[in-house]
Every structure is written in structure tokens, then in C-alpha cells.
Amino acid sequence: MKVKFSILFVLLLSMVLLAGCDDGDSGDDNGDTDDPTDSDSSTDGQSIEIFSWWTSGGEAEALQALIDAFNDEYPEVDVVNVSAILGHGQDAREELANRMAANDPPDTFQLGPRDFQNWVEYNGDVTDNRLEPLDSLFATEGWAADYPAGVLEVLKYNDLYYAVPLNMHRQNTLLYNMDLVPTPPTTMDEFLTLMADLNTAGTVPVAVSATGGWTLEIIFFSMMAGTAGAEYHRDFFTGALDLTDAANLEGLNNTIANYNTLMSYANADAGAIGWDQAADMLMAGTAAMYIHGDWAKGYYVSNSWIPGTDFDVMAVPGSENEFIYNVDTFALCNGAANRENAMNFLRVIGGATAQEAFNKVKGSTPVHPDVDISTWDSAATSTFNDYESATILHNVEIHQFSVPDATVESGAVGLADKLLELYQGTITDAELVTWITTNYVVATQ
Image 1 (cartoon, rainbow, N blue to C red):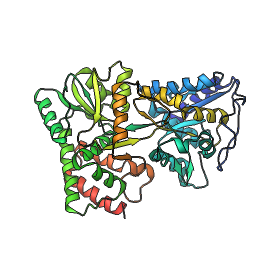
Image 2 (image 1 turned 180 degrees about the horizontal axis):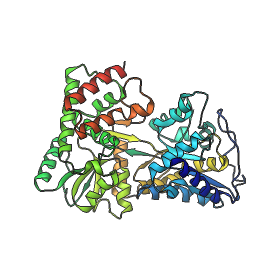
Image 3 (image 1 turned 60 degrees about the horizontal axis):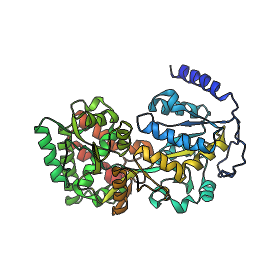
Image 4 (image 1 turned 60 degrees about the vertical axis):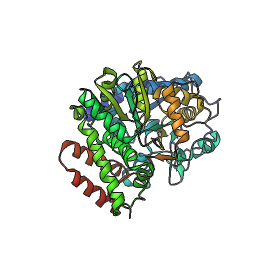
């Protein structure tokens, strides 16, 4: 079935691209060579094909804002948004994998820095690089001096830049319905008490999606920072924590206890709904709070929910000193059929104009310093203020708790899988602690 789908997709897409898709430069592993700022470059009649997993409300609109910013500069270039054609982010991921396996790459695609090794050393082969380095683009645009150091370090693999960043998404975010939570909690104890009170009143205290372990991991690490402290969470994530120490082990046990308390108050259908459906519960008034990445804020705004009036955002109580974030990026495929257009697309989205349009919709913090957010909504400005005042800026793409001998991808989801097993009741709290401590010691030696 997948083979038939891929063939049909290619046939449909070829009809779109027949209008004049230039083969362009294939690129090489030694870095880009064309000047992407050359406004005299011919792009008439050409297209650019992009892949992304942004298909939900807020995310799809944010991607369109990037496309619009590109077309403002290059109106003659037809942007083929494969995700919009396929209609679902997971379908786009699968089709991207099929295309890459067939040596038929798109021009550019969304990826997380954890994925770099998968593409730079395709199928574990260091001689098979499916991405083109972007060092000359960074040099031309001066981005190495513009972007935050914590963002720059996740864009490199083997000391070469491989992706253009768009934003910083805070993950330790608590979103809440202001009618149900007129006075938000300021400490972990207040948070736990509020959840108990809401539960007694018949309202789901915290909406949860448990269809994938990654959503549970966001909650778990937010609760760790709020329970054991920002320094503890940072040290755990970076492999600096000694879990043979009794005090540190107590911090882990307390984290699991508070995490379990939260999960005991979760909606009964958590295992059957996605993150956006969990977010819907706040708008419906059936749940009061939601711990998730702040892309949920963009989702709410896209549904006409007003920050500061209908809902608000804050750091998870107890984690105020830490800004836990990830980065959205786009890369250039080695062998891109429309390489010149792809380079221009990356140049545009790395600039202030596109990032202002994108992040205002996406709900995230821009990385380009020339974006002025002073007139943005209260949620955006308060998140930016938290970013500036945080004593610990922790990028989850840099250090990730992993199991021994894991690949970058499987290591990133190792604990997420265990949290999902805990939710499903196939392991106990004690077994989770044993798994964490055993694998943590081995993985950090």
C-alpha cells in the first residue's frame, strides 16, 4: 500500500512541478558555493518542495507565514508544501523517509537537531551525507554573531552548520484557563493543592495526552525542574548528576511521586487523544491546566482564544529559574532539485522579517535579535521576559538522557517509552527508578 501511495504521490506532484522545475546544483559535502543573496539569480518558473510535520492549527498557519514571507521576496517561485498535500504530519514523515530511501530528496525539510546524525550519516554510513552544510550561508548572513549560543551549538554536526533555526519553544510551560484558575499557583506545593481542589470540584485539573511518550516526557521533566529544582534537572539531563548519592536519588523519587500525583488527576481518555485534543479541553472548560510546549499557545490563538483574557501561560511552578527549550529548524537536502530556491528560502526564514511573522503565530520566541516583540500579546512578552531572566537556559536538543549503545533517535525516546509503560501500568514506580538509575549510570560513564 505504501508503494502504491508513493507512486501516486509522485505522479500528482509531478503535475504541479511540470511548469518548470530546474534541476539546479546538486551540491556537495564541502559546503554551499552559490551566493544565496544574489537577487539577480534566475528563479522564473521554478518551484521549491518542502516537507514539514506542521499540520495542526497554529502550526500550519505559522508555516504558511514562512511561505508568505518567502513569496514576498520571490513571488515567481511556486512553493509546494507537501504536508498540506498529504494532510497529516506523520504521513509527511513517512513519505520523506520513502523519498530519501529512493534518492529522491525534496529541496528542504523540517528537522530537529537530534535528527542530524540520521541524515549526515545516512543508515550509519559516514560517506553518505543527505544534508548539505550551510556554513557559507551563516557567514554571509552573519548568523553566528546574531543567534544565541545555545541555539548555535545544536545546529552543528562535525563542526559544520546543517540547519537554519526559527525559534526557541519553551517546554516547561503551564497553560491555564483563566476562568477556572483565576489565581495561578506559584510553588509546587500550591500546584499540587490546586489540582486536588479542582479534582474535588469535578474539573480535570490537568489535561494530558498519553498517545505518545514524548508528551509525557515534557510533563515529567517539567515536574522534575519544579520539584527538585532547575539545577537538578539540568545536571540530570547533562549527565552530571550522581544518582548513587542518597539526596539525588531522593530528588528522583520525589519527582516521580509528584508526577504520579498529576497523572492520577489526568483525563480518563489521555491514552486516546493527541496533544491538540488535550489542549482543546481547556477551551471547552473541561480541564483547567495543561503542561506542554508553548506551541500550544499558538494553537489557542489560532482558535481565537485570547492570551491574558481567556488563558495565560507561565513556567511550571518551581521551574521559574529555568527556560527549557527546543529549536525548530530547516535543512538543505544534498542533491536538491531546486537548490538555489532552497538556499533563498533558508536565507529568508533565518531573517528577522520571516521570524517575526512565524513566531507571532507559532507562539514561540524568535532567535533573530532584530525581531521586536514589545507589541506582541501578553503571553509572548511574558515568555520572552522569562527567557531573559532565567538563570538556566537548557536546550533539550543538546543533552538527552539515553540508554546504553542507543542511537540518537532511540536514545531520545528511551525514557519516553518507559513513561508510556508506566502510564499503561506495565511497569511499577520501583521498576522505573531501577531502569533510570541503572541506565543513567552506564550511559554517563
